[in-house]
Amino acid sequence: MYQIFEEVSVAGESGERVKALQRELKARKLRGFLVPHSDEHQNEFLSPSAERLAWLTGFTGSAGVAIVLDKAVALFVDGRYVLQARAQTDPALFEVLQTPEAKASTWLIGKLSRGATVGYDPSLHTIKEIERLTETLGKAGIKLVPVESNPIDAVWHDRPKPPSVPIAPHGIEYSGRSAQDKISDLQEKLREEQADAVLLTMLDSIAWLFNIRGGDIKHTPVALAYAIVPANGRPTLFIDPEKVGDNVKGALGDYVDLAEPAALEGRLKALGQEKARVRLDPETAPIRFGQLLEAEGAKFVPGADPCLHPKAIKNEIEIKGAHTAHLRDAVAMARFLAWLDEVGERGRIDEIAAALKLEECRRQSGQLRDISFDTISAVGPNGAIVHYRPTTKNKRTLQKGSLYLIDSGAQYRDGTTDVTRTIAIGAPTAEMRRHYGLLLKAHIAIATARFPKGTRGQDLDPFARKPLWEAGLDFDHGTGHGVGSYLSVHEGPQRLSRLGTVELEPGMILSNEPGLYLEGQYGIRLENLVLVTPPEKIPGGSREMMGFETLTLVPFDRRLIDPKQLLAFEREWLNGYHARIRREIEPQLLSNDRAWLRHATAPIG
Image (cartoon, rainbow, N blue to C red; front, side, top):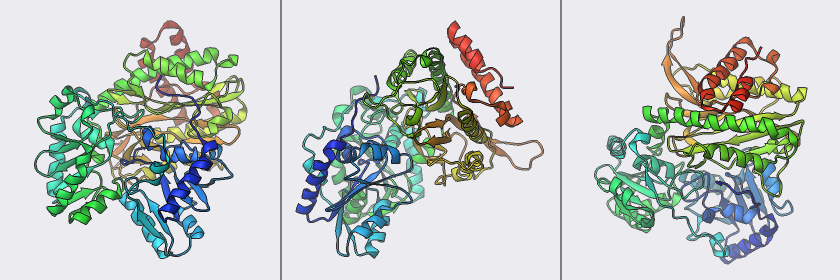
C-alpha cells in the first residue's frame, strides 16, 4: 500500500504549538515568522521531517504559508485548498485567506507597525520570493530578517529524522540519453553564458541530469541532494553516502565526484573566494545560497535552472515509454471501472476501499513502482474539495444518486501517469449531466486545439474555460500542469494556466483537466495527459500548427453524456477516442472486462 488513510491533521494540538513558537520568537526578539510549505529544494511533496506547516497548523495541503505573529496567526492558501484548510485548522486560531486575492504582505502591513522584524528561514524561501516581499514590506518600515536556525525545529521535539533511501541508476533504456551527454550539453550552455558553475537545488533536475532515481520524497522518485556543475571539469553530487551503493558508484564514478551534503557550504565558499560567476535560479534556489555566495565574493548570476527546459522536452525513448506506461495504466483503470460498475451501487464501497482497489489493479501489472500522488477518491460533496484526501475518519460510502471523482496516477520506470474520471453512481440528475457535458466540452476544446509556434499555456487556458464562462461557471486552478518521465507528476516550466508564460514545444507532456466544484454537492474533473505534437501543415492554411496527442486511454462515463450538448466535431472526437481505447485496450482484458469496455466505449449518437 503506497498511501495511508489515517487522519494526520493536528488541529487540536496546534494551539499549544503556536504558543510554543510565539515564545521562541519572543526570545529571539522577532515579532513574527514565516512558515511555508516547502523544504530546501522547493518540493511539492515533503519528507515528514520537513512538514513544518502541517505540524504547526494541521493543514496538509501541498501549497501554502502561515504567518505567526505575537498576537495573530494567518494561513494563506490558493483556491484549491480553501475548503480543506478551513476544515483542518482551528478557526478560533487561524485566519484562512485565499491567494492571490489576499496577500501576505498586505496582511503583515496591516498588523505590524514600522520597525517590526519578521523572521524567515533562508533555506526554505527562494531568492525571488524574499526579494519581492522585502521590497514591499520595506516601504512600510517592516524588516525581514533571516534566522540561523528554524525556530520551529527548536520546539518540535519529536521531529522525524530526514529520510535516507538508496538511489538507483535510471538506465538509458528509459532515459534515452546518457548522463554524460546531458552534462556536456549543460556545460556548453554555461560556457556560452560565461558562467563558471551552476548550483542545482531541485531534486527532479538532479535526478534527470545524473540519470538516478531515489525514494526520499513520497510518490516522487528523487533523492535529497545538491549538485554543482562547473563549466569545465567534473560535477559534484552532494548526497548522503549511505544512499549510494556500488551499482550507482559504478554508473557515476567515471564522470561525477561524490561528496557529503555538509561539504556543500565549503565548496560554495571556495567559489566565492575564486570570484566565480555562479548561476542560481532565483525562482527555485533558496536565498541562503545567494547570500552565502555574495558574502564570500562570488558573482551570483540569475538564470532559470538549466535542466528545466531539456527535461520538459521528452526524447523519443521517453515518449515511447510514456505510451507504454499509459497503455499499461489504461488496462488497470478499465479493470477498476468495470469492478466499480459492478459493485458501486450496493452501498458497501467507501472512498478508501475504492482507492485500494485501483492500486491493486495497478499492482497486477507487476511494474508499479509507486503511485504518483495520494489518490483523490471523493464521493458527493467531498468531490468539491479539489485536493481531498480520504481518511478512516471522514470517508464516505458510494451511494446511488451521487457522483464519484477519482484522481490518481502511477509511477512506472518508463513513465508517470495522472488521470481523473468522474463516475455516476446510479442514475445521474439532469443537472449533473449538464455540468458534466460542459466539462467534457472544455476538455475536448484543449484536446483538439491547434496552435502555432510561440503559443504559451496562458494562451490556451481560456479554451477550456469558454464553455463554463458562457454558463456563468469557472474553476480556481490551472487547466493543466507539466508531467515528468518517471519523475514529478507536477513538472515545470510548462503549464496550461493564466500563469503559463512558457512557450509550448513538441515533446512536452501536460495534463488537460478542467473542473467544476459545487460546495456541499459534488465535484467534476476530467483529466487526460497530452503530448505536444510537432508542427504540421493544415490544408488551405499558411502556417504550420502544433497540437496535442492524448496519451491517457480511459473512457468517459456515457451515463453522464447528453449527445445533444455536444457539437458534431465534439461527438466525432469522443467517438474516435473511445474507438481507439477499445482497439488498444480490449485485447489485454479478460472476457467480463471486455464486455464492459465495449459498452463503455460504444458510439455516442
